Amino acid sequence: MNAREKYGIPSDAVITIAGTVGVGKSTMTTKLAENLHFRTSFEKVDANPYLDKFYNDFEKWSFHLQVYFLAERFKEQKRMFEYGGGFIQDRSIYEDTGIFAKMHFEKGTMSPVDYETYTSLFEAMVMTPYFPHPNLLIYLEGSLDDIVDRIQERGRPMEQETPSAYWEEMHNRYQNWINSFNACPVMRLNINDYDLVKDPTSIDQILERIGSFIHQTTLLKK
Image (cartoon, rainbow, N blue to C red; front, side, top):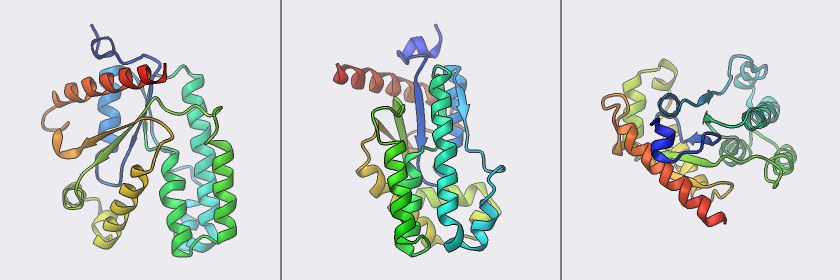
């Protein structure tokens, strides 16, 4: 019996992993996909034509960057469902508008007109009954101290040079976002409750929770 059958996880499920930097989204995506024999969907950063321009001039390019992300994630979301599901996705389409575009607007690096245009486009494309929402969004959470410790531990140079105030702001923004998120079912996982690197068997407990959660949400829809 494979893990999908053991824990009652549908073979056509689409599961999205969300959370701030350092919580282990990529590791979780990979491990779940390996155990469920699902495909993975990772963000494609290298082909982004606006990223370098954006870092040189936030105000000029923030709107272009966010629209590009929206279009690419929209196409990827459709692709996963057209393929017949069976995907674990690293980062959701919802975080772009709920966290990053909103942050640019509030900090003044996206004009009110651009922000209104962007959010209207997002609502028309994504927040409709016709858009294929994930079966489940797994939100990886932890205390600010635990997340910063993980960021320091993995030692990426750009992250090491980032002021701690930024990580605190992102932590708060993610918490505020997930507390009001309702586009699809949400299952929260605290990063202190498992260790997929040191204890690979901890994935079993997560898979059991996922199977139970999807079963319960399916019953509620009936």
